[in-house]
Length: 526
Image (cartoon, rainbow, N blue to C red; front, top):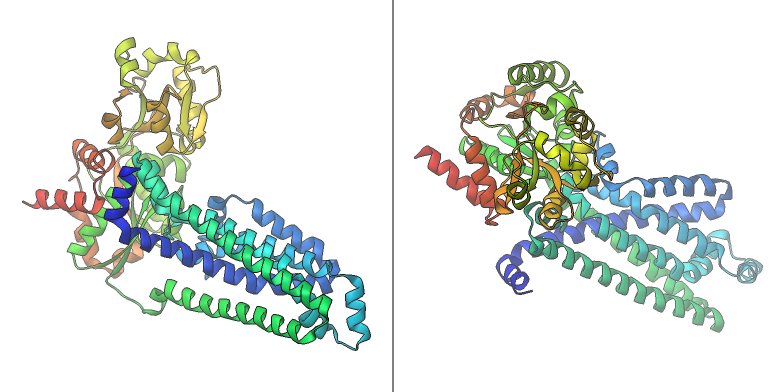
């Protein structure tokens, strides 16, 4: 707890910024969801034939995993891309079901006799809706908004994977850096936000419900009209706030074409963020204005690059060769590089830089104590112990052509139980804690030495080479001639030892990555 309070005292401004980003994402999403879901629910009560199909679609949308939904949205024009806009669209889709469903349930739950009495008084359908049904159903509708808000607070943490900011930035960073304090810094404010939203909307729900019931019993139409006006005023205010939030989130869209502006991306692990920051600071030194879109999960960097949402990002030739181009793994580094360079240019109009100087190969890792105790040096030597070991691998390793299936076949490995499949950053935690006995990490990862892990030699040379390169859209290079010159200075400049040291400074020493990169660049120039 002391480390957490110390972190808060040192980083409270950043925490407030991320909390504000998180709040605005949720507020914007709920505002849109109410503006869309409430009229949709009302329509379904007037057109019962549409109810099953519309609610069915809303149900399906809620079953789509959040990262998958983000991936689907990125290539889409107008509503897609990376950043806040895509996150808001995804959150709206998740929030629609409880709002639409509760609107239908609330209105259909109004006592039939009350509706008939209003009709007998000569009220039109619109008057019945505004003065009778909505006031009486408002507590049920707000219950749906309440559920939607809590869902949005939780799902918004995943939005950090597509560069939307928010408290998920701390959570993903903490998992990656083996830092529980960072995880708490993201999780605690998010949990408090969910509790406040649940309590606040719950109180409003209770008050409106009580007011509606008392007004119905006392038969005071003026109070019902007043209540309705208040409800519609709240909805209108939310829509106004939405407009302001959306304008603030997307203000860069109205800045016009800026030929010196670059969007640099990175994947969601430490080395990628370090390399992304290295590209960003190199570009800034060359006079470019840089927007950072770091920590993008899965293949989102590739999707964003091809869709024109980012201009460049660091990649590895082996990953491009197998995961993107779908080739069978080979061990010839030069052939892999030349194939990737040619096919990326032909298929994606993307240029591949010269290698940066190091390779981040898959590293089969065991605990250092186990390697010393069993005198293990190679994967082949460890194969005989595999039946008694529990393996844990990242989703990427389990699904890739050069991953688990081919690896176990090449070494004739046989685990008694199917490997645990988890986020890559968690595999290091699990291995160090003794929950698993072997993992597939990254050879340049700073956590290897920080956690006393041992890398087994790939003695059968199964894994293809993973030379670090920079992928840049061709149109970005053509419109920014100085960019090619700036990137060329990085070719061959980073050794494996340099990369491990940079990763160690970030992961083990918990230093700010911008500062670490700035120091390395200054040292290199001196």
